[in-house]
Length: 172
Image (tube, rainbow, N blue to C red):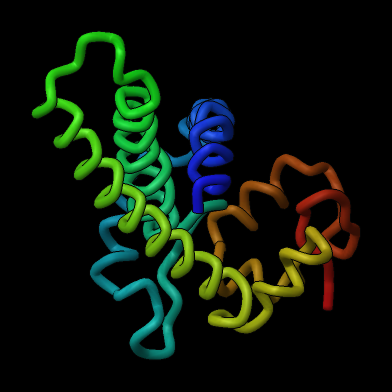
């Protein structure tokens, strides 16, 4: 257990770097829009047969995975972790206790959301695991699950519908 604590304390700053990089990479496309409200009203398509419209990221990915887990919990975990890593910087006992509590609760929320995302992004949604392992999805899958993204890619890729390259939908 002692080794795990030491490794955790030394690898923590890498988590911070990862959070910053994720924010820089995804913030632009994770801005919620009116389409996302409709996605939530339809339950994300998980309850019923119709899939609501979605761009490259659906509303659940934007709100839960990006804004709640990565930004919210990631920042809380990072700041509280730094407080816990540097107790000699003059933090009060109360501040250290609060940092410990915040760190633990934020980590539990973060891990829970990421595990849910891993499930839904792999075996929870038919075709998602193939997309992750190949980097490509069928045209039908893209139209059904991320129709707005499909239209964007189709319009900007300058390719025929059947061609495929790095994340561009391919035919079945």
